[in-house]
Length: 65
Image 1 (spheres, helix red, strand yellow):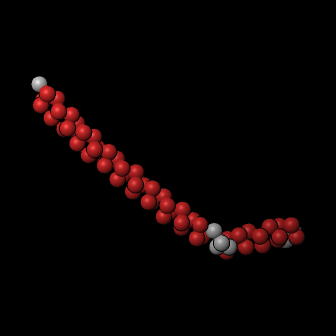
Image 2 (spheres, one colour; image 1 turned 90 degrees about the vertical axis):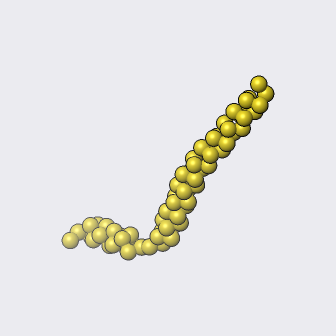
Image 3 (spheres, one colour; image 1 turned 180 degrees about the horizontal axis):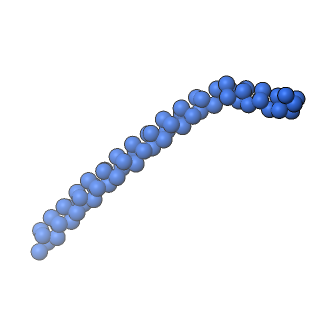
């Protein structure tokens, strides 16, 4: 084997077995899951608030007339 290729293979093996970034990836996945849940919850909450204000608006407009 050529020395340059052997050095490349050695560095590649070191990168494969390196796990320093594993915690960072796990935290990123947790943050993404929390963000997804928050967005889904906010959409549902927004619909409920919109419905409540629509009902209040309807009641106010019928009470005035």
